[in-house]
Amino acid sequence: MQAIIALLIAITLGAWDILYFQHVQMSTQLMAEMWMPPAQTWQWSFEDFTVVYTMWAVMMTAMMLPTALPMIKAYDKASRRYHANSFSYSLLFTLGYLLIWLVFSTTLTLLQWQLHGLHWLTPMMENNNQWLAALIFISAGTYQFSALKNSCLHHCRSPVSFLLNHWHPGHRGSIRMGLLHGTHCLGCCWAQMLLMFAVGVMNLSGMILLTLFMLLEKNSPPKAQIIGKTAGVLLCFWGIRVLMV
Image 1 (cartoon, helix red, strand yellow):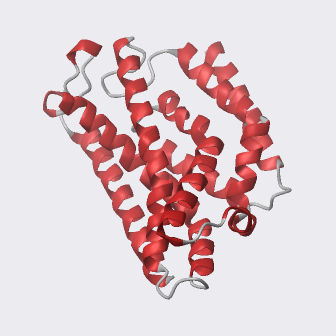
Image 2 (tube, rainbow, N blue to C red):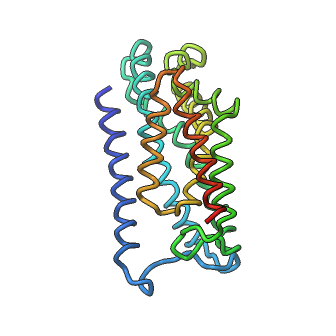
């Protein structure tokens, strides 16, 4: 278990290091020297899509991998009962999990492409439309109360229950379980990820706060629903406040 956790911690730290480097570049570089997303959809090149997708993929890895560590540790422990060397199985489980978020990064990339075309995001990737920001805050807040959100959150909070009910042996089983856990995790957190379009795509403070909240939400006792509900209320009020400014 030590090897897989050490590897995932190294990947997570590497992803955060890249995000911090990008943040410093955006804060210190002259605008004339800085890459910026084109303002018109028809101006986007393959390179522009690649840059934006890579940015989202790194962000998803940095933010979501820490929240999955308890499940990965539980899977690795269970896997050692069936396999002499659990490292490869745990690695495939993790890759299956991350694949869901990497695919979702494609959706976020396409959404950002359209938002730039509508001029709802600035060239610095900050929100430029208070109605969009309010809609995202209120939608994310409302989603905190949905049955789908709470069902997916239950899976994320209960590694032992997930493993007992969805165990599949072998390498294919590892990937299958990773994909399933990633799907549950996406169902739990997709609306929270959209908040980055409201607070600024490259807002480092926003990334850190969201990651800490998701860690708290996923690792709190299953009956401690007050955390998610309180966050939902605060997000809705935040959205209303944005409209009133």
